Amino acid sequence: MNTSITVVSVIITVALVLLLLSFVGKKNDKKKPRKKKTKDRAAIIRDATKRLSQNPRDPEGLLAMGNLHYHEHNWEKAYAVYEILINLAPTHPKIDEFESALRLGISAVKTNRMNEAIKSFIQARQIQPNHFEVNYNLGYICYLQKDYEKAVPYLRQSLLVEQDNVLAQRYMGFSLHKAHRYREALAYLKKALDIQPDDKEALFAMAECLYESGSVDRALKVFMHLRPDPSLGPQSALYAGMIHSQTNQHEKAVIDFEIGLKHEKISVDIANELRYKLAVTLIKAQEISKALTILKELQQITPGFRDTPTLIVRYQELNQNKNLQVYLLAVQSEFISLCRKIVVQFFPGAKVKISDISVFADYSDILAEIDTPKWSDVVIFRFFRSQGTVGELLMRDLHARIKDLKAGKGICLSAGVFSEESRRFTEGRPIDMYDKDRLNKILHSVDTGTPLRKR
Image (cartoon, rainbow, N blue to C red; front, side):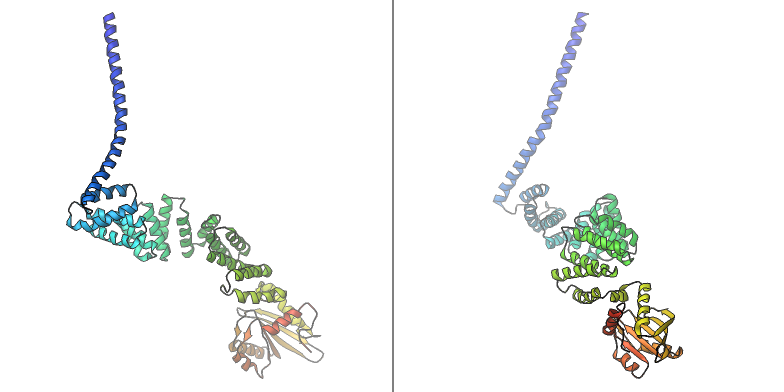
């Protein structure tokens, strides 16, 4: 029995020793490749250098060095080697022409040699026309060079090989977006975002495509989400403000534009657009004083931006005349209320009875019965809010209405000017014309008790 126990003990001990040796052997085996790799790299460099010292165009030496530089991402050295190899390829069977052209192209992209990259990829494409990397890189370079229509077929070909490649989906969407093919772009941008949801550039491009395709509400949600972004925030705020302004939500638009201007990193062009649109929106909201401050700031930063100087001159005058603000900018009810005051005060000392008010697209008419100590008659007052030119046809229309209603006179007031033809037509006819200068004097006199015209 003791003998049996001893034998078993020996067997167990031997097994443990063998197991330990096996573990140590495996541990040493794991260390050997690292030493071998270091040795191999040194050997590759030594052998290749020896070959190239004897012949600078030795194919085997160049292939060894090129492969080493390429895998170590030493792109400048890789480019120099493959530039030689691609020229040697036709006369040396050991050199893979496709691989050399592909690697030369990739090294050229990495070192910003785009024209050389295009030549290399086209050469590679002649050998393998459906290769993913070749088509993707050609499309990517065309996108960088803003040749968007040319980028699309290359990127589409690459997606036939790798349909879920996020970069190919991304730049396909970007290229279609820049080519103004907004609806087509949406599918690719959405796919790119499904794969990489945190891609804010793709999200912004998708919002622009939605905006241009008419899906304004969806676009607005994305632009408002991106407003705080340090890079895309200013332009997103600009779009959000434009959308709110288009729907007459002026207060929200002002907030959008102000958020955009608070960003530290903002291009001059976007900043100018934000200031200009903020000023225009403030004008629509009848906050003329604030608008003028913004316009003057814009004029100081970028003199002559759009019609900024004209707006400053125009709205400085408005800022000094509240009634002129109402005449040009107020809602229809406030405008008509002001027109009624003008009619009532127009003839000093007269009794005035307003019998009809008609509002049309181009003008508003007020029909009034005027009774003065010297005369009594029906007068038609026609008010134009536009600051443009009133032409002859509108005067002919007014004259026809005077005759239809058997009125004694027509008074025509415009925030703009009258054409020479309209002035000639009214000569000898019962129509008095008040252009912007004469109207402005009338508006200054309303509510002050000053007679609007002499007796």
